[in-house]
Length: 461
Image (tube, one colour):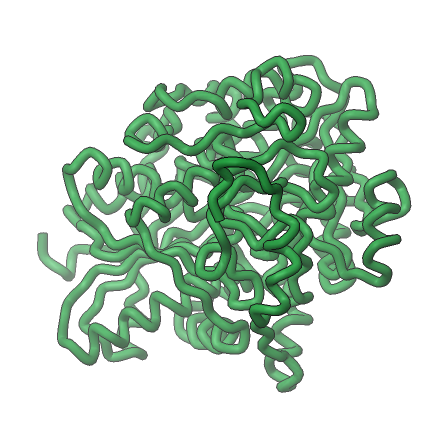
């Protein structure tokens, strides 16, 4: 198919939207390590997880074998409000860079939450409603997940309690107000509302918080309230499953025009968008059908893949959650208050950690001033103001396109544009005013987090 026939935006028809989620674990030779009970160090059972998670979500969390899972019609109907999402050819960016590379991005910002998070929020809220629960609790970093969940809960008439990382709560008041508009209650974390919050504040006075702190509070709130369960916007297997709709649509759009990507790039915090984007392509690689270069991009201030250790660790700062085997900086690691709030998590999805450890994808860390420079360059030519999180992927996509300019290679690059940055103007202001600082933790900064990782036989570090 000739180059001129490929449009700026590739849309799927409504009847072409995927009707099943893809479970990449079914094709993994080395399965993700199971969650462990921190008391017994034995794999968590469904019964043990029922006090925290919804029953159907537990089944999805533990399912390593079912390749495709049907999306309930009610969820498909909700998806149709903003899906299928476009795959966009970045012609203007290519021209600006004068690169022979072809650059595409999957845009997930076509909904009020401004991000991909709604794909899993509606699924988790649906299963909570189906189970007859009163409401759900959660944490949020930059606010995209909290906003998405508040929207889903409002749609299904569920109560929604959000613990928002304190620095983001202060940096992004408008994101907070969107959540409240949709009926959610929003508390800066760590707070004095929970026992674990009070403990964290006593140990770390004046802390700006972290996703690990907020998770601890949300789990405590769920387990101490009748009719509530905890839901999570990233990291868990079930979340990557729901987000596979991103990759399924991306692959379908590329296949529609006989386009095969060489490089697929996603920002990486806990793993939701990266895992969702790459999953069907990774499946092809795992089955030996095709080969791709996958790049996970994380902030230099919170480098779990590039500088973390692969070990069982707590998913939360308060150590109330199960142990997950992942690349981690230690559950006690408190990242700097950088502006990519959605990437400020100490660990990485067990599924992605296993794929990374098996050498099936690579990881890079980037500094935030370089990230915002890329965001600004992208906005000026492509007309979308990107979220700080997404801009990590933009940074590396530009870097790879410039390599192609040097070598003359005509590679096809695909990256995930997870959402918009219109609630992140304080961050852009800091960048434009020259007050934004890059922070890279030293080995000494990372040492306390590593030392606190649980020590038991077989927990390799």
